[in-house]
Image (cartoon, rainbow, N blue to C red; front, side):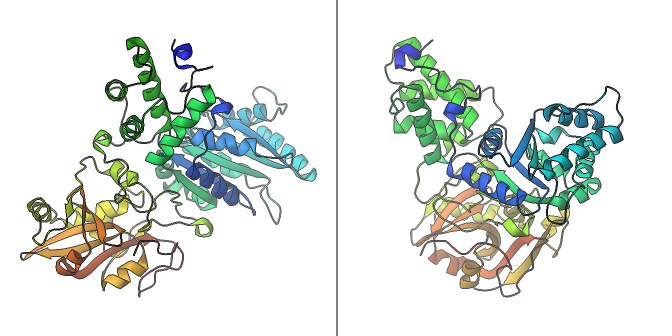
Length: 468
C-alpha cells in the first residue's frame, strides 16, 4: 500500500519471518553465546525463555543457521503433542521411517538407532522445540528419557527448549525436577532497550530500501516506550504509523501520527508494561540492574542482577506500572518523597520488588525473608555502605525518617545519585541522603545453589560496575 510512497522495495515491518531482516541485538548475541555454551561440553538441555515477541524464535533460528556440518538439527513448532506424537514428530523432522501405531518403545528405539548412527559419523544431533511451555509433564519427561543415551563425554541428543516465562515455572514442578537438573544453559531474553529499538527500526528501514531517517528520534523514543521494546510490537506500531502517514499524505510520519498509531495498536495488545507510554526514554540516569542476560540456576554460566550502568531501566519499569521518577536534591526532602517514605512501610512489598529483579514471583514464605525458600535465600544483615557497594546486588534498605521506618529497594548506584523502588515508584536521590536515612539494615537475596559469603558477596557472580 505505502511501499512506493516511502521508497520501499518491500514492507519493512512485516511480522512474517524473513531472514533478510534478521537483527541480532547485543542481548540476542549474548543469548546465542550462552545457549551454545550450555549445550556444549556434555550438556543435554538448554532453555531460552522470554515474553511474547521478544525474539526467541529469531535467536533459535540464528543458532541453527550458524551450525556447521558436524551438527544435524531439527526444529519443532507449536508442540501440543502426546508422548507418542512427540516421538513421531521427531522421526518426521529427521526423516526416520516408522509405522503408524508404533509403540513408545518402538519409536524410541528408532530414534536411538538414529542417534547412535549419527554419533558413529561424529555428527551431533540437536532438537529445538519452540513454544515449549505447551508441552505436558509426560511429554517433557519423555524428552528427558530420550537424552539418557550418552557416551562418557557427551549426550547423543541435545535439546533446546524455547518458550514463554511459564516454562520456567513448569520446570519447578516436583515431577520435573530430574529434567530441571539437566538444564545446563538458561537464558531469559528481555525486550530491547531504547537505543537497541532505534537501531532495530533504522535497520529494517534500510533493508527495505527506505530512508533510515524516516522516523524522527522523538518518534522512535515514543515507539520504544509504548511497545516496551518488544520487536513484534515495534513492527506493528511502525507499520501502522506508515499506513496512517500515507493515508494523510505525510512524507515523514509526524509525531502526532506515530502517537495515534501507538494508541490504536496497543489498545488491542497485552502490555507487560501498561504505563510504558509514560516512560522517560533516553534518560542518562535512569539505569537499572543488569537483568539483561539473567541466567537462572546454572553455576557455569550464572549471572545475578547487578547494580550496573548503561542499561535503560526497562526491566524495572516492566514490573512497576506507576512510573514517577523524582530527583530529590534539595536541602529539605521533597514533599512527594516524604509522602512516599510514609507509604513504603511494608517490608514484604519491598522484598517482593527485590525478588522481581531476579525474575521471581515471591511466595508468602519468600516475603518473610527467614533465611530460606524453595529456590532462593533471603537474609537480613547489618552493615555499611561500602559492604553494599562491594556486594553489587540489589538489596532492600531499611530507612528511617521522622521516627518512621520505610523500606526501599536499591537497584542502581551512580556517582552522585542512587535509584530506588519506593512504594511502587522509581525515585532518584543524592547519595548523601542515604547516610541520613539508612539505619544500616539491609535484606539480600541470592539463589539457593550459590554459597553465601557472610561478609557480603557470593561465591559466584559478576563484579561491581556501578559508577563512582
